[in-house]
Image (tube, rainbow, N blue to C red; front, top):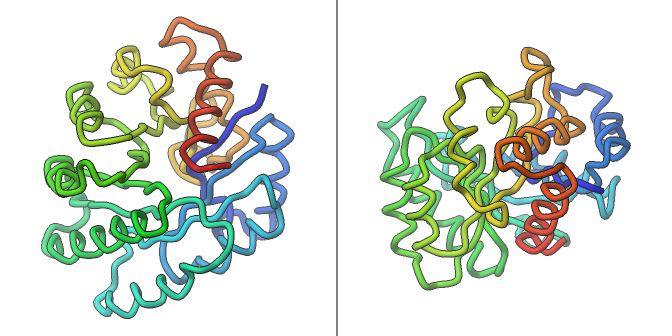
Length: 256
């Protein structure tokens, strides 16, 4: 039995000199593959460096996070594009729309998002979508890409079953389920009862969104089994089934 963490930032400074140890703990816990989403140019080399240190276990992505778009955003996009020919990139992201912190730059967020969606199509790789308090706007953008072969995952999915069904009408979309599913009264714990297991990916979003029983501490990819256990409970199945199906989903989507 093995697991895949489809969204982890173990390369970040939160782990200090112990980021490699965190990868090893994950592998020891059965989380044998980890997807490393990019955020911006300040961490990009760390993403690719970690992937090179753990070939076959850590896989790099290329992207610009919507909350990290600077005033000189065109230069930041150019820096991102300089990496597009790097070997081993498995996805574009994380990218998307975030209206939690700011809406005044919505037009710029959308332009940067569309640039990355176009890049994913050009490179024929999936996209990792960050969506926070911008569901309607995000879905309207994706409608323009329907039928063009765009595919990917809605990271940290917390939406309704109705939004999930709309995503299925728009293309080949999975949902990433993380530590929030273990939280008391989390609505996604009920929603996933209705989401087919073959559309679910496991993720941590480490170092954030730590699952119970470790909530309040720094998250790690090694905690994926706790997330899978909760999914199994909600779906009325066993851990082996969740591990097998979700890992297969990740390996298919990301080509790993």
